[in-house]
Amino acid sequence: MTGFEPANPDFAEAVAAAVLSMPAAIHLGFTFGALGPGSAEIVQPHRRELTQHDGFLQGGVLGSLADFAAGSAAGTLLPPGWVNMTIDYTVKILAPAKGPTVVARGRVVKPGALITVAAADVHTVDADGGETLCATALVTLRNVRLTPA
Image (cartoon, one colour):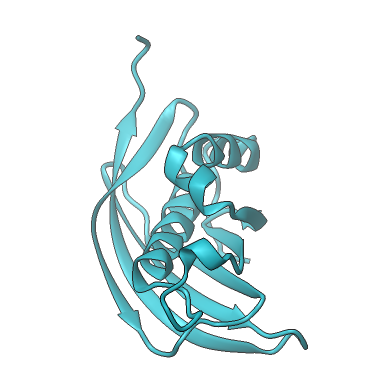
């Protein structure tokens, strides 16, 4: 329980549709796990084309997953017709990410009408379900009302 009230009762569908239509998200090939008010989970299967020479997920991929998870968490609190865009993020890579799955869990730190601050932790998940924290991020997002074309 996050204590946040979503402005859109259909937030889960809206966030998933917005994010999974983005070319970068399509390229990464992740799926959503849980989506709640102020929180989001992204599940990334290990894919060779996302790795470095040693089989670890490349650092930019970890940053992208953290950014998508934090932005998605922030998106769950937006009213219908609004989206957010990252204006700044900092990622700290804490351990190599190698395993069958990586999970990024985003959460809202401070929502706002114009600016939202969110965070994400990225865990590598081994075959037994054990998790290792491999990256953490702090993300600042700008909330934007969509205008019809």
